[in-house]
Length: 296
Image (tube, rainbow, N blue to C red; front, side):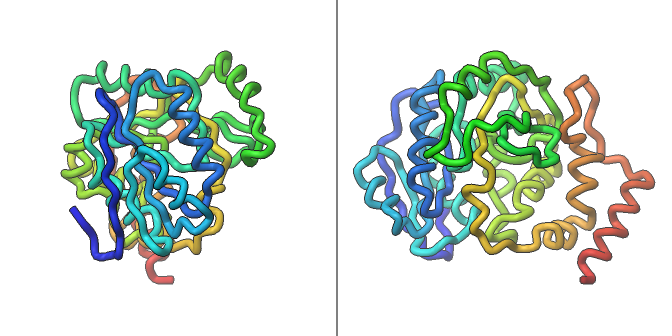
């Protein structure tokens, strides 16, 4: 699939026995992108296909990629995560698409844990995430925070992070809905990838999860032993944001908060419960709130 936005493609050879197609959108963030890729190459248990979308690339990203073995898509301007993800997916050659931001560093065993869970579940209707370690507390119950190992490539304490990752413990949790996240290629194709009406991308994560829900996915799980360090918004902090809260409410008739908290139970330790879309009081309250949001 190709898109209306002026995006070009460079399709390079895929490594033998690649397991995941790792999709990394990047916008003039070269040093962080290099660190992300370095961590994948250094700390992965399996070989993967790495694909980058280059937004602009005038900071040297494009020239650097020309010397590397990775496939990439390219836009002259920042087209946002939705167009970038769909562009990169068209270059993917494996069964599994894994979305990761360029401001993330993967820790040892991250992919082994994810793939073990995929093998264990034995079907394609899943959406799994790694667990983020973050330097500051962001009210995200799914993250391990605050544990500050640096805010940039300059002050990054890599050895300290790797030592910490060996000992930290977190249960698997419900509510996987953001990167690093992995989905089966057939499921991606069935829902049509990311919805470009959410460009540049705010609200696209819960929208993608809602689309997965609508085709029968009920296994939204974060894996506590699959760890990544997140430098926190080094990728998205510069973006002019769309109103994802409004866009989600207009499209689905409920609030993101309701979907995350009451349906996906995000941050709750996995305990064998069945995720349900219950239409009780909180559902109708969420519909009322969604109507208020869309009127503004």
